[in-house]
Length: 391
Image (cartoon, rainbow, N blue to C red):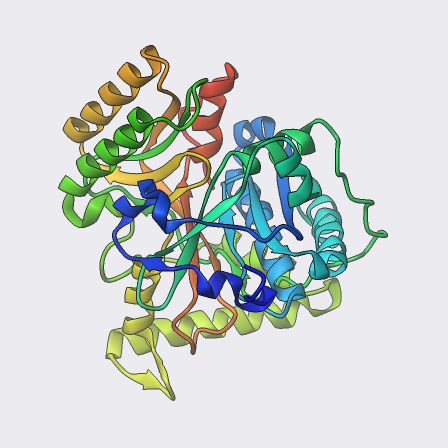
């Protein structure tokens, strides 16, 4: 790894395009020893979800990815979105820039979203001193976007340290703002077409990642693959042309200071109007093709991932969901895995689109009624009871 520069490390990780590859250890590479993990999650996300603010929670979680990548010049660094938080791996030489970005994102979440964002920077050297590791794989969701998969147990350990108050970052001064260029959440919730939107988390049991756990992951993925388009929650031709006023207002708060918000809102509304017109008339505006963009939204979405465990948000019918639930219940009873599974009627999308003129825009998928956060709560004994949440 010494002959690979920090900037090119993730690009050097072999790409696989069949999701089943997340269980193949040959697809993973160790992060360089001098790298660090930038982490964040929402304190009190349970209450925020019960108050109907899960879209705000998603926005705050994704803001960490946007803030750090923008601060690093949008380099090719591995990250994963977890619903109410995120993790980004980056070279130690970028630590100062990442620290400032995390502190600013924390301040922005507090002042603009009234959410407490917990942030930390954890050195890989400390992770490895614990006998754990962070390895990454590179899954190609489409020809234009690839997402990092994390394994080795180090990410989970780092998250636990953060929640215990270690590796904390000094808050930024009042009024500090991160660069959240490209962060958006304009789309309306996406309704299920197959029956239910299921947010699923499966993590190894006390014995760690065993062959039986890998087989469980393979079996769950295989069942979901029986559904049309692998149970992808976003239609193949992209989400319906419906836009959320609340989502637009969130984007305005994220991407413009107070003095520029009226102008930013007008710009966003004009962009949306132009997209609708171009889509309906099947026209292009320069190099922008609205119909192609919508199809890319579907292809580029991260509805399934591996982050020291399997995470999926599926549009799935009752029969297949029942089969998956039965597998997970047996694996839990046998000590192979712990799991959480939360069903809802629609999915949420939070996006990172530095420019719609490029086809590498990214879209983070979660359940609209608590999603991964509720599923995770089932594994900690803090199960939430939520009938419906309005994003």
